[in-house]
Image (tube, rainbow, N blue to C red):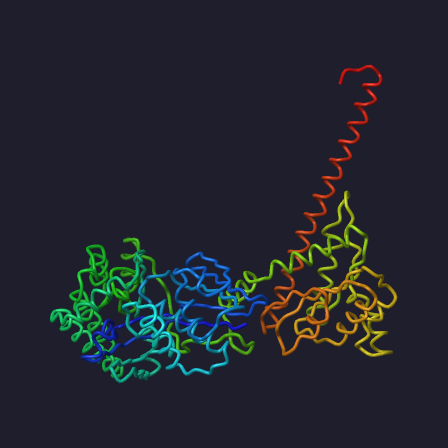
Amino acid sequence: MLFGRTPVRISFSGGGTDLESYYAKYGGAVLCVTINKYFYAHLSPRQDNKINIISDDFKIEQLVEQLDDIDDNLKLPREIFRYFGLKKGINLYMVSDIPVGTGLGLSGAVGVSLAKLAGNFMGNDLTRQEIAEIASKVEIDILGRPIGKQDQYSTSFGGLNFITFSSKGTKVEPVMLDVKIMKHLEKNLMLFYTGISCDSAVVLKKQKESCIHKDRHVIDNLNYIKDIAFLMRDSLVKGELQEFGKLLDKTWKYKKKVSSCISSHYLDEIYNMAIKKGALGGKILGAGGRGYFLFYCEEPKQSYVRESLISLGMKELKFNFDFEGSTLMHKEENILTPRSYLVGLNSLVKGLPEKEIEEVISIMFRAYQTGKQIFIMGNGGSAATASHFSCDLAKTISSKKVKGFKVIPLTDNVSLMTAWGNDTGFENIFYGQLYNLLNPGDIVIGISGGGNSPSILKAIDYARREGAITIGFTGKTQGDNAMEKLVHKSIMIPSDNYQYVEDIHMILTHLMTSVLKNLIYKGEERKAFNENIDHSNSIQSRLRLSGFNV
């Protein structure tokens, strides 16, 4: 499993000059910074050859046989996969912290994150520059979107950057500020969501056509916006933050002149209110016409701006700068936020193999009906899961009407386990118990994140030879997984993070207990119904024999 996290960006000035129709002739420049609002993606292998893509943002889930079956709502991941030759046997889960189409460069973050994941999945160690260029190529050249490159480069590199574009290539230069200046800049910026979203390509397509046809009015205003990007960078380096705020006001005025679609009466009302209450400058982010408004306002006056804009129906988005850029989060040593951890867990839950789960439930249900025993084992955290699962099967399912499973946790008899371990070796702690208790047709369940525990492998091998049915709950945590190959049925969690694997194993125990309880209780209800019918028929027969009309 690969887990990617890529930030979105704020563009201060220069947006629009990153389109090839402009920068190929005049050269482009953008000043931008990434923030701690992210696009998350999980990529993992499937045991079959199908492709499963889930987008929480678009509320879409597609399970298809081949890439060409993926519809255009998911065309960006489709073409990223095609570019890297990823054609089958994959799960992809995607979700972001912000709404789609709000001017924060989300599509660029999506392309960068997926390029990084797909490249890594195929064994390619790509640089941030290469990832940004691939994401740009797929979105601009292959999909034909009339957009620029700043989003891909900004989100790939992360941090505060001055990015220049020309026919010779793209150059990313970090803007190095004194720590205090950087903090003041961060605190003095405010983001407000207008509640309006749309596709930036609509605005950018018109701008592209204007540049191609050498519309002097559009080109002149883009030149001014580019020049302001240079002035903004210089003002930040000098620590002149008030000058930066005033330049933000200038870039907004020139940006509005590029196209009539960039602002509106409503957006002008918002902007004028913010300036009146103390903001030095601001601009709508992205191509314009919708999304997030950015304002530069010093802290003493922020409460006035906040109250006024909220009264107009705006929602503030709190944020901090991000300096990591696009990152792989699949290794345990990486620092995870609560949000990213939960996103990863949710991805794995959505990708669980339902067919395999149903087959295991069916095996356990038949064991219940035929009175077979179930033995469950695991080491460490998996020992606790084995004990918990046994408790649920025995007690949760049990009631006055039905009995629970004949289940024995091989993890709970400490004296017996330590006796076997001490006298004959730790690898015998479960095998020794099965030797005395196991009958043909019983079920033995091993729970192991890595699937290579000697104590579990020996017990499963013995159980198979004695005619038991063996089941494994495991994870893709280290190299070859011996248990997965040894058991009759396996449920594999495609993650190399033990915490995720153990979390999902616990979810599986509760899922299976709930489904089994429902099956057992429904069976008892049908049995009681049939018995009542038979009893009723018997009474009616006796009444008829006695001369009653029934």
